[in-house]
Length: 133
Image (cartoon, rainbow, N blue to C red):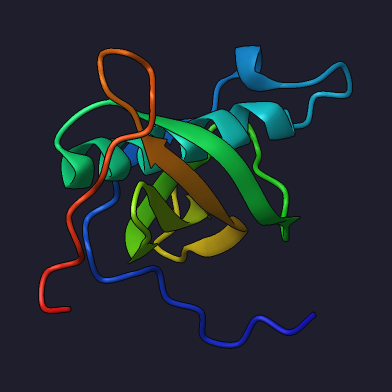
């Protein structure tokens, strides 16, 4: 898999955190579930903002772990709304790592998260279209 001149997205990350020893599996590697949780939180922020209310994860597609994350790395998670249906939203999410004492960033994982907006009754509710569509 070639990673030539990768650059993180230009927009601000939805989440930025330092990977800590408590985030590792028994082998000392950063736990994939921890990273997926960050990505779900970032996507959830985008979904809630766009739908103006509660939204829940219903699917994660194409989750790919491309590189490891190491304790001490700064992890930045970027999320952007890609499409909307009547009640659902697809959000593209990428996580990038940067070693504490380095300027280079590397994509470590990516996926598409699907959220459904729900009302107080926990039933699906409609969402607005993407601006400009």
